[in-house]
Image 1: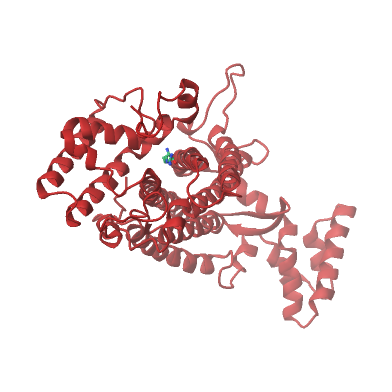
Image 2: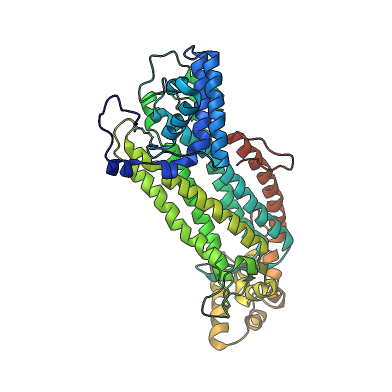
Length: 474
Ligand code: ARG
């Protein structure tokens, strides 16, 4: 029997059912649907629409459905169009006649909007905590590698030496912005749509404020039309996940490059690499490649929802059912990617000798020579010309740069010491720079940032922080 059997006769055509069911994917909302129903039932009780006994009967039935779903014994029926229909049907089977009162004053339109917000609150909290785990891996690796350095690149050409810790923390800072975005998306989605009904509210004495508080939302909707049609929070979540995915993609690309024979900066742990079905010698960086590959899909999911929303008239339209698969998919893919990359980065071995050899080429200290001249009064543009000319000469005449520097009237032996291996990186002393003193300060600030972010996430996702400082989401 359909939910609208009073109005439409004869049943729904099977191809319409096949086209419109969302149960195959929206069963991911089961837990939050039950949470929303429980709050709604309690609200109906407070409004005097349900007696205390009726509330108790329905709450017990909801608990039983929860248990059946958790155990996997919940039997879906062929007519269950979506998770909301399935839950209401089963609650009614268990509770008897009072089940027919469950949907009083509620529409699937405000129900699904509420469910999706509750789902997103949990999922984004979980993702943000998983980002912190990856940041901790980067932090620990950064601490462990001490003063090891490697070439920093621009245009993928060696530019200046940087501490490996600085390089690793660069990814950590991009991820910190992801956490920041997730937390601010959580703040904006913290509005309950329950009580908006189909689109216009209700004639019954419902109290959406109390229901919002019951569900742990900071506030209720201001406008019922907006409440049932707004999916901004889902679009924002998809953007946050897409940009996070772009950062993971860039980290993945780095591992792909570093593990080549050509770079040779990193060796992957066997558990985080794959082999070839044909070439016995191969060890492939598939985790990095997949992190890179998934970004396309995450961007696609964002685009998909934005295109769905564009041009929709107020308020609820069935098109909105298309909001779920992109969101569920992005959450799942990012969750998997974060875990795999955390393991990958935690276990790879850095070849710091090779990194340092690559960074010790004489020309990477060229700007240090120029700045040495600046400190002795030469205008930078002129100093740049002097050193650039020496580098060109050294290359064209196959003479070591050090020899030309020693012989130059404005430079000489003292300047040659700048070209010694490991010297250039120590000269990056400005705040936020790539040298040891700056990076030590950066590390300390980063540790504090992670601590503060853990608390912000727990607060925004409405979950407690556990004793060891982890966020107990999921
Ligand atoms: N499965 C639907 C969705 O995901 C639930 C809401 C259906 N509402 C309706 N008026 N047909 O959006």
